[in-house]
Amino acid sequence: MRLPLSARGALVAAKIPLYRAFRRYGEPRLPPLAMSFVVTDRCNSLCKTCNIGRRFIDDPSVAEGELTLEDYTRVFSSLARPMWVTFSGGEPFMRADFPEIVARLAELVRPAVINVPTNATLVRGTTRGVEKILGRLGETRLVVNVSLDGVGEEHDRVRGFDGNFALAERTLAELRALGDPRLTLGVNTVLSRFNIEHADEIFDYVLGVVRPDSYVVELAQIRPEYHNQDDVIAPDPVLASRAIDSFLAKSEKHARRGVSRLVEAFRQKYYADVKRELRSPVGHECYSAFATCSVTAHGQVWSNTQRADPMGDLRDFDLDFRALWRSRQAEQARAKIRAERCHCETSNVAYSNTLMNPRALPEVLYHFVGSALP
Image (cartoon, rainbow, N blue to C red; front, side):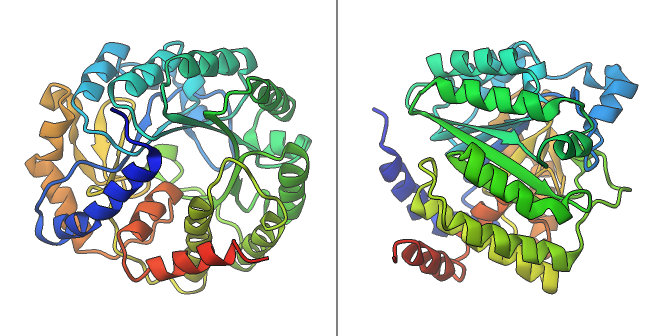
């Protein structure tokens, strides 16, 4: 029998002391609460903050040898039941079998939430793919996050794709027309040195015109998965801090149905942490490789997509995730994370870190209670 989301949340809360013990002592070795799968290195965008698309266009062979549909089926069969699973790329809908990959995870693993970010350039493929996923989703909630990093031609400039903005608008309209209550239609904006001066214009357009169910703003990040280690992409810290304040102020005026008050409280805590890190980088305890992890398109398992501590290759473990999770290499990655203060602010990982930190939860409660006040 499928537990309601509230009951599953209570079970997760009960496991927090066990995850803290896992991080400190190495036992009990619990399965991850959240996972991300980078399903392809193919991309049709040439974003100024990411080199995945440029790398693929220069050498399409980088996408050869990616995990197949049957490989994913075997991996999913070895998973426990994470609460949250993200599928990303590249552009995930460039894989013809991507909807089937997601559908099989939904059927075999039944997580509470599946999240899919997309550049929304493949209007028909994205809409039909989402329809197929919804047809086999069960009670899992599907979040589709459309990237919007500017308004009109500014978005096209930042994303390196003429006409992307118009295609994204069409995709948003067609996804909204599906009318499925299990579908949360979201928008994600990455603030970088290329668009930070247009931040308010972006916020006003998304909140006032698009009016998505969910809206997440992040700062541009250096990540191995983006192949951008040598690039200068971060926005000016002062401008970034002001933009976050502006976003939070504007968000208070636009309630969104797809985001619970509790999730919104965790996001408020995330933005507060981002601002603190901009002012004075002190780091935090990281639960990557304990409560979260990432799987690359070729089967490598990393702690997360920003730290990228290698935990092992699924193909070396006959595609058995449980065996890899308990391996010596996975333990070596965890030892490294235990010994360090982490400075990454990847949002999905940040939420797990907050959940596992008793000192952070009062701040989440503060935001939760504050959101209910008139």
